[in-house]
Amino acid sequence: MTQEKDTSKLILGTLFGFSVAFVIGALAAGNFGELFPGLIRIWTSPAQFTRDYFKLGGLGAAFLNTGIVGLICCAVFYFSKAKCTGVSVAAYWLNTGFATFGMNPVGMLPFVFGGWVYSRVKKTNFGSVANFSLFSTALAPFASELIFRYPNLEASGFSFVGLLGALVLGVVVGCVMPALCAHAPNFHKGYDLYNAGPAAGLLAFLVFCVLYKSVGIEVPGNTDLGDGHKMFVNIFFVIVFSLCLVAAYMLDKNCFKQYKELWQSSGYKIDFTAKYGMAATLVNMGVYGLFIMLYYNLVHGMTLVDGQLVFTGAKFTGATMGAIMCMFAFVAQGKHPRNVFPIMIGYALASLVPFALYATGVTPAQSWTLTTQGILVGLCFASGLAPVSGKFGFIPGVIAGAMHAFMVTSVPLWHGGFCLYNGGFTAGIVCFILIPVLESFMKAKED
Image (cartoon, rainbow, N blue to C red; front, side):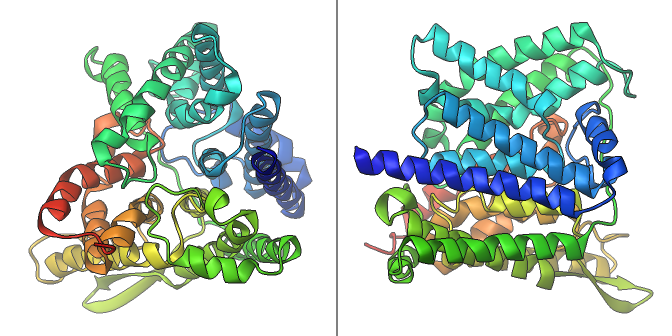
């Protein structure tokens, strides 16, 4: 029990350190005169997927919003006396990840409140459901929509009635998400690390139908992307992820030996902090984080322009930065470079299909490349399929990644762009289709 408490404190301290790093990043970004006005714009704007907070509020304001969201997560864990585990790390990074393109305290807090109401109804400690309350924020764009725009197509300012609606929605979602998340593994059999994705996606589909489709209210559009800040984002994350390696070594000089064992893990139903310790998990944070940064810097989309082959790199927008952090989410509970790499290969191979159809004149335009924003974000959640490659091998992992790539940009039609866990929802659908087939025709690697 003492070891569990120590690990919990280490995890919470690490997450607090990440939050402080984002605040420092906000100050390092400069342009102090726009810092708080930009933050207010972020907090008072509809947050339908995908809203680039780098463009809406500015680089510093987006980092500050991320730091504040991270501190709120830490406060939830600390004051609820929650036992922090690998799941808590995931909940933290999903909230901070979306804090650069769809998450802010205004949209977030009604669902945290809903989780607290659930704990009172069930007469249990809020700490036992703290993770669930933070996963329920996947529907945060609905809250921002109700408060600042619904039922209009353009933002119309603060609405008190909308605030009440957001609180009611937060309570309903906060009370049903624990049950849905508990049932979700029956849907994907534990192979989708983003376990809350299918639960949030189906719930968002229901809310979307109630608020828009069935009552005939027109769905607004919100995608607004800037040109990004590649150098700043790279410098920030390289420093942060490198510090993870330094912290791991300071915590335990044998951490790299322990990491060799972690590297062999399938990633299926495992908590790295419990099995390998916090030091080895910090090594994975550093190595995996740098691995993600390498991918986003090297990846290029391929297309034809006037008959010439053209390659375009990734733009480091708020959505791209958020994807990096969301991809980092399950770094303590299943992901490492070895089991995520096949998923990346699956995306790369899938990208050849729209290219070939366009190049041969079958389609008038190329639908997507590897650097299309939706695909850059989609990959981060496709990495949640890491247990597929970990358990069944390289080729099934490639197939899972390719399936995810083909579906991820179409799934928002189900929920109107109001579910932040769109890619996790897609990963659940991939598992629902693929896992029974794999279990029928293949054996797991250990068998």
